Image 1 (cartoon, rainbow, N blue to C red):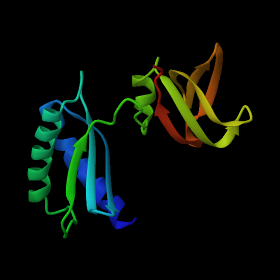
Image 2 (cartoon, rainbow, N blue to C red; image 1 turned 60 degrees about the horizontal axis):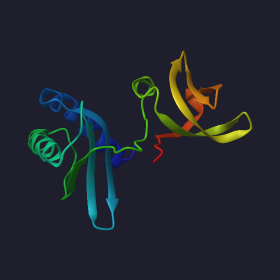
Image 3 (cartoon, one colour; image 1 turned 90 degrees about the horizontal axis):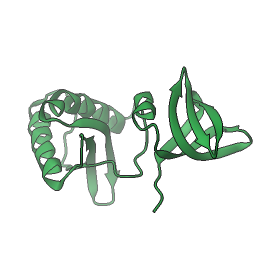
Length: 156
């Protein structure tokens, strides 16, 4: 496992232990080297809307928790960013396909489904190990294991 993934996984565990107490759900954690330096990015959600104050509060909680945790192997400076995953959030866990049922979605697969690798429609949840979408009245079952990327979409 590379060091960036290892750090992201450790921070995810720390965030998942600390942020729910403040009412936040941890969606994802990324740690990467960028042009401006090392960035630790944490995506959070809650019922309702995420505000700048929510991000600031979560960052304060996380910063303190990361600083006291000896298991986090960050030995150099980094920037901590806390934000909402946004309207076009990427779905990463099976439970998100159930949670966002009824929303529009765009899925990219590793293998063709109905001769397509990009499928769009309305998310209808999961059935066993398949993600269900409705494409103009046609139900499409996409095996979860072949999903490369899935994002919520919205129309204006």
